[in-house]
Every structure is written in structure tokens, then in C-alpha cells.
Length: 172
Image (tube, rainbow, N blue to C red; front, side, top):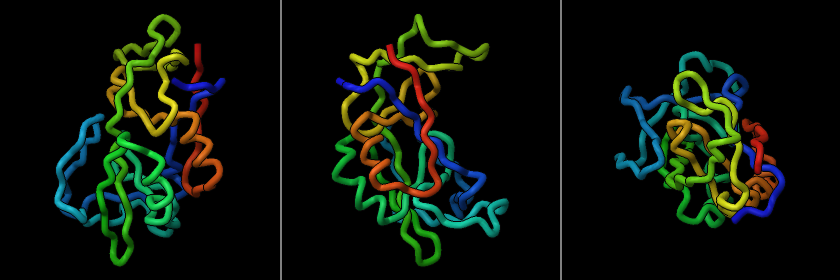
């Protein structure tokens, strides 16, 4: 399991980068399990994103993230079986939806703060249960957060992708 003092969640800078919606108008739900979609799935920029740049990391829906083809090539050998990559197409640009399919029981229930709706207001992870590689999700936040193993955080910091921020999560 993880040997780190800090775990991070991946947060897309959706206010600063182009985000996308499926051109067919359907909703994609990424809830920690593989999904079946005809590929490539044609997407278009969200109408509110006119003029925003295309970044290395973007968004189609909450609970997943989109990466450029170059970042996909970089991540593919690093993620193991923690991500299902789904090919997206926007005009002549190939993008990849990252559906995180690794759900880990690592939330410290006693030290985490829950919100009134039953979700997680402040996550605290048990360091002995956090995976060492790839991305992961937890069921307690309805599979919406995307968390980074220590190795994945280091790999992303080395790549320096645009369009992403990292939020610290506490460990016990």
C-alpha cells in the first residue's frame, strides 16, 4: 500500500479550459465500473467554453476526466487496470475519457467528515489501504472524486499537464 504523507485528488480546471459534451446529447456516468460506449464517441465543446483553450486535462462529466492523446500515451503504461480509456473525437482531435474503475475501501470513517447528504465533506484516508499505483475512487463520495496514488501524483507532476489542479487529502 501507499508510502506517502499526502494523497491528492485530481481537479479539472474547468473554468480555464475547454470542456466537452457528447454530441448525441447522452449522459455518461462513470461510477467506478467499466461502461460500454461505441468508440470513438463524438464530442463537442460545451457552449459555455467558447474561446477557452484545449488543455491536456479536461472534462466531460463529474466523476471522470478527459486527457489529450499525448497524455494518454504517457499514462497508459502507468495506470494498470485502474482506468478504462474511452476514445473521444472532436473534429480532428483524438481525446480520451478516463473512467476510473478502481474502487478502494480506504476511507477512515471515524476521522472523515460527512456532509448532511451522506457524502464526504472532508476525506481522511487510511494510509495502509491506499493503493501505490494508478487512480482510485471511493464509494462514500458516490464515486465522483478521482484520487491519485503516490506514484501517479509523481508521474503527473513530472509531465506537468495543463488544465489540472491537485487537492491535498488527509491521511491517518
